[in-house]
Amino acid sequence: MSQPVTLTVNGKANEVSCGATTTLLTVLRDTLALTGSKRGCNQGVCGACTVLVDGAPMRACLTLAVNTEGQSITTIEGLPEGGDLKPIQQAIIDSDAVQCGFCTSGMILTAHEFLQRNSNPSIDDIRTALSGNICRCSGYRKIVDAVALAASRGGA
Amino acid sequence: MLTFMTKQDFHKPTTVEDAVTLLKEAGEDARPISGGATLVALMNARLVQPSRLVSLSAIEELTQCTHQPDGSVRIGAMRRHRQTAFESDLKAAHQVVSGAASQIANPPVRNMGTIGGSISFADPAADYPPSLVAANAEIEIAGPEGRRCIPAEDFFLGWYETALEPGEIVTAVILPPVPASSIGQYEKLCRIAGDFALASIAMTIDFDASNTVSTLRLAVGGCGGGPVRVEAAEDALIGTKLETDAIAAAAELLVAELDPVDDVRGSAEYRLKVVPRLLQRAFNNLINIREPAQ
Image (cartoon, rainbow over all chains, first blue to last red):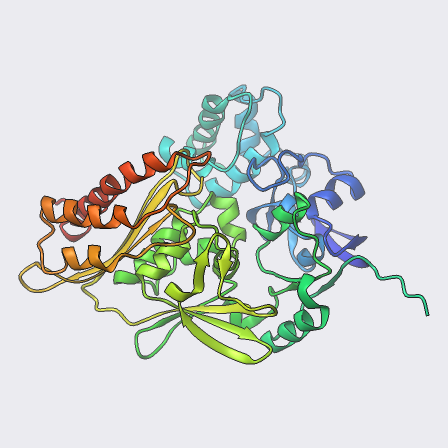
């Protein structure tokens, strides 16, 4: 049974029709063409689909679209404000912390929320915060460096 | 009249009673959904195909954590792991539960997963089951016949099986009052950050004025179909000052009752070797809690 749902994504209300079991990730990618959120494991393990729901990082693949009505969803496409990259995005670029890029959007959204709560994290804090995001290029070191760089610049 | 049964429907009731009615109407294949961290993963893997989903997220009472006047704490079933990990109402021995919550998976999953959902799935390697047994928690359940409470020890029946009857949902976890001097400790061993436990030990403990163990409850996770509590091992430690040989004797009694399996996280043999060390580590860390370094 499909039902109409209003999803607020990146500040914009979208009327979509989805089934009871349709995940937020499917709607983002297949209906709204926001393909920055990646489908990796579809089991909540890899972190590539991480989006912010009311500001908190969550797995889009484990979130039912119908259950997010009334909540505010931010994807990687909606993170820059007025075209300006967030400090963590700039730091990822400056640290050359992207290899294949598949994990990058999930890493950035997780790190962005983490840096908003912790302006002066230790390397261990960063590693723990990113423990739910897997990089199969195993480029972790530069990603951790990038988060530390963003923090040292005083941004999130 | 020919009716095309549509595959699934979705409901978001605002009361527990409505949720129970909606589940009962649709029969066995209906599923309540709380955080989604488990159920949606199972649906994505096509292991479960519910005929009806009843979201519990709009039921106000399930989202509350309340400190009762008698000192007990009622954790609503929809409380997320992250909320429970940082719950300021959880003090003394109740911290065995917040300690377990803080070690579940990773931050994004802790934003989603709920205590009710986690214990209803009853993964034997999950963090809440041993911690709730150690905390002597009661599980509050609602069903077509009304509400009932059962001790956590009787709730986990083994290997993803609980005392929930068809149509019933968990509504809360109730932690009994504890002395301010008591301590709760959750010690977990896992292969990588965020994994389920290879083995875990949950305990609540209190000491008398002479530093002798006066009360102790101990439960092991990840080493069988459900949390394992061995009263003989607790008795071997009550009345001691946690001397190394007392801990070793208790570990022996504990290990004798465990029945772990070989799986991807480790062999049964390895688990049996690790549990005594984990127990010793839990007590070592306990000393750090009681006598923080100056």
